[in-house]
Image (cartoon, rainbow, N blue to C red; front, top):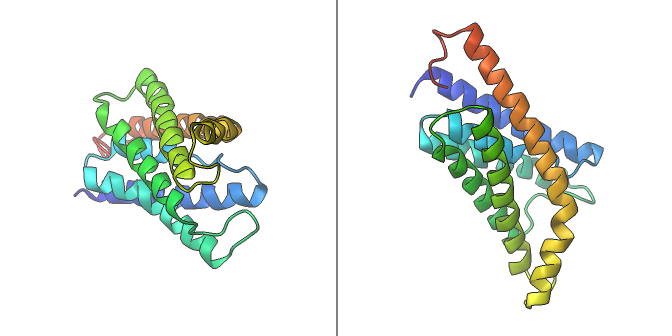
Amino acid sequence: MKQNQVVFALVLVALAVISRVLCAEIGAFNFAPVIAIGLVSGMLIRDAKLALVVALSGQFLADVFFQAFPTDTNTGFYGLSQFFVYGGLLAATLVGRVFEKVNVLTVAGGTLMASLTFFIISNLGYFAQGYNGYTAGGLVKTFADAIPFFKSSLTGDLIGSAVLFSAYFAVKFAFPARLKTA
């Protein structure tokens, strides 16, 4: 495994933790670009295991922080639905693994696909926990109630993807010999 892959992975994990904690502190829930970070790791980190670890590590370390320092809105580990959140992050990373080339179209399409996939999987977890009951009406209510969170999440992911991929290409342009692959 190349040293630049590990450094890139550590930077992504740190960005995930910092963005989740900061967004929670300012009340910008679901705005942290954790799905974008999963997508970036899936697209740019050649080692598939490392890419998946990156996606989960940032989320997990932020959850550990929230467990140690709980607030009214963040308590760290919260039950069954959290496993679906982690599954959604893995799925977003796998979406990134599908793309052969990284360009504006694949980044935009991948971000939309990863965000939508995460939205579906994570809200199935909320439904599985039984908050709205186990009926078709409860399922519809779960997804309807989640739409405002999806708007915030998608916005954060689109901005996060734009910033992260722009930074990647800026570094790649500035140091072409050092950064053949992340």
